[in-house]
Length: 147
Image (cartoon, rainbow, N blue to C red; front, side):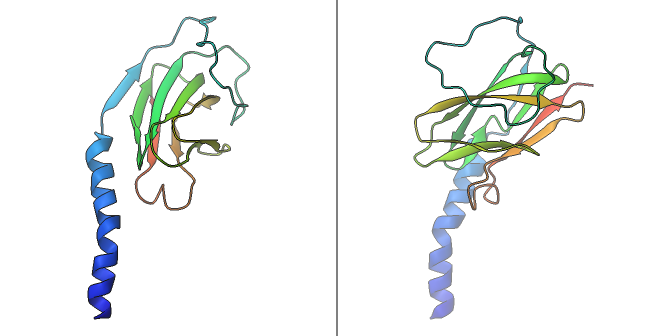
């Protein structure tokens, strides 16, 4: 009886993991550096940098969506290391955050967007959602620098 109840309780978790894997797409998006001085849309909320920046202008904007429960895209490539602006939009129904490895998390409520300046080193950068259980369920990603 206990074993049957445990299996039934595990079904929603398994369904959520399968849905996250199926909708994550595994697509790789490549972004070329943006012209310095390009402006952000008016009204975009802005967050403090989550990692030390190089002090130079942003090399471009990378758009990432957080959904229940994953990132889209979950792998991005950039032409060179440096400072990039992340435009993080939460398209899910629950709060999610964007947390670069070694940096602080920026929590975004459902339907909201935040911008975060990050430093992408030559070795690349991993990111995740640090809300309990989200990274374990697959809410992780990487930014790769083209060699």
